[in-house]
Amino acid sequence: MSPDDHLDRAQSVVALGGGHGLAASLQALRLLVDDLVVDELTAVVTVADNGGSSGRLRGEFGVLPPGDLRMALAALCGDDQWGDTWARVLQHRFAGHGEMNGHVIGNLLIVGLWEQLGDPVAALDWVGRLLGTKGRVLPMALVPLDITARVRGLDADDPAATVTVRGQVEVATTGGDIVSIALDPPDPKPCPEAIDAVHAADWVVLGPGSWYSSVIPHLEVPALRSALAATDARIVVVLNLAGEAGETSGYDAIDHLAVLVQHAPDVTIHTVIADRTSVGEDAAELEQAVASYGARLVLADVACDDGQPRHDAERLAGTYAGILSGS
Image 1 (tube, rainbow, N blue to C red):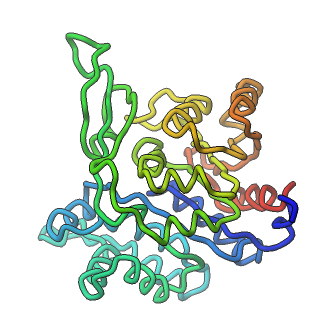
Image 2: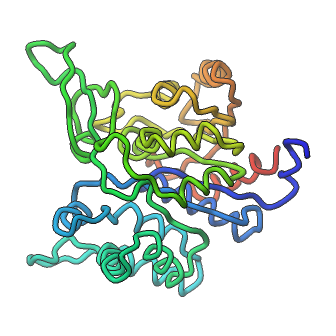
Image 3: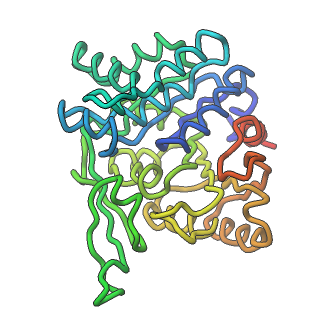
C-alpha cells in the first residue's frame, strides 16, 4: 500500500489542545464528519486548568479539571435542535451570589458521572452519548496536572534571570517571557485510549490555542509525546492568528512554530496551517522556516471577519478538507 492510499477513504483524525482553540478546531472537523470526509474524530484534551469552576471542583473533589473537556464535548455537538440545545445547556454558567456562582452545568454533570462510574473515560463517553457528539473526548492524562514555566523578566534586579511560575492560570497571565514549560508530575499516567487513538490515526492536529498552557503541554506527557513521535499519522500544526496577552505576547507565526519544535524536536510535522492575512508580508520567511522543519506550509483565509483573533469553523473546515484529500 502506498502512503497516499489512505487518502481515498474517510480519515481518522485526532485533535490535541484545550480551551477555545481546540473547540474551534473541533467545530471545523465536526463539519467534515457530517460531510463523510472524517469517519473517526477524537479530541485529546489538556487537564491542567486550576482556575474558575474547574479549579474549584478539582480542589474540592481531587478530580480532573472538567472545563476544557466540557468545551470539547460542546464543540462536537451537532447543529440540529438536540445538539444545539444540549451544547448551550452544557455551557450554561450559574450567576447569583452564592456558592454556585460561576459553576458550569457541564462541569457538574461530568464530575457527577465520574463519581458514579469511577472511570473518567467511561463518564466522558456517556456524556458524549447523551449529547449525540460527532466524536470522542479523552483527557491527555488520568491525573490532574500542574503546568510550571521558566519565565524571564520578572526579577527587576536581574531581568535576565528566570523564575518558576506554577499553575495554568498563572502561566497564561505571566508578565514575563516564557522560556519553557514542564508538567508536575513530570511523567503522569497517560490515558491509554488517547495513546491508542494517536497510533491509529491518519492525521493528528495540534493547535490552535493557548500555546504554552493548552497546546505544548501535550508534548510534555512522555507517553503521549512518544506516541506522536512514533505514529504513522501525518501531524498538522494550526498556528494562532496572533500572540496572546501574557504567555505569547509579541509572538509571530515563526515564534509559535519555533517553540513548539523546541519542546518536541522528535515529533515530525507534516503540514503547517497559517492564516494568510495574519502572516501578511512575512509569508516567505514563514515558508522558509516551515521548510527547515521538513514540513509544508498551507496559507489560507481561516480567520473570522469580525477582526477578532478567532478561527472561522467553516473556513478552517475547508482547509482541513483540502489537506486530508491530499490537495
